[in-house]
Image 1 (cartoon, rainbow, N blue to C red):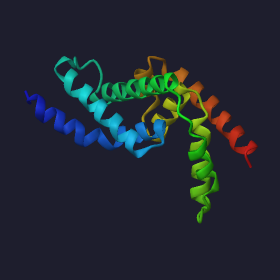
Image 2: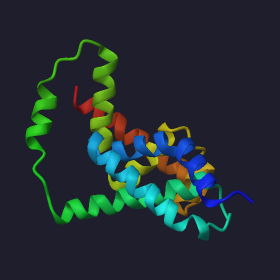
Image 3: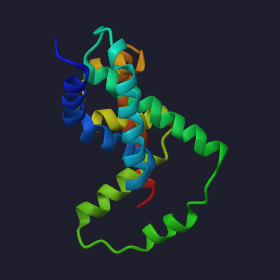
Length: 163
């Protein structure tokens, strides 16, 4: 059996970028996302010996990351920060490329979704199969499918109303 350090190194190499994108989707800050990635992998290291192989490593790590992000959101709710200035600066930016503007509008709409819906969208955008999303969230694949359909409708309406 491989030693803990070897397994951890392989997991870090394989999932680091994936977890960073998830954390960034929650924080919209490179610095905060990096901090959350470190926190996630600290938890992976601390709990790696207890991993019982009931799920894939990817599901386990993604669950750790989502819980870490959700805890960060809760901490921020207890210590609110005024992001209006940052949002105003973003609103004033000019985009040279229409696709960049559409992408920004989409991510702005995604940030308006509730925590669970943002989590589902993040996983869908990462190409995670709906079955695995259900495993991470503790819901059925069919329930994930229904939620994805509802979220797409919400996003479409948000985007149409902002134009």
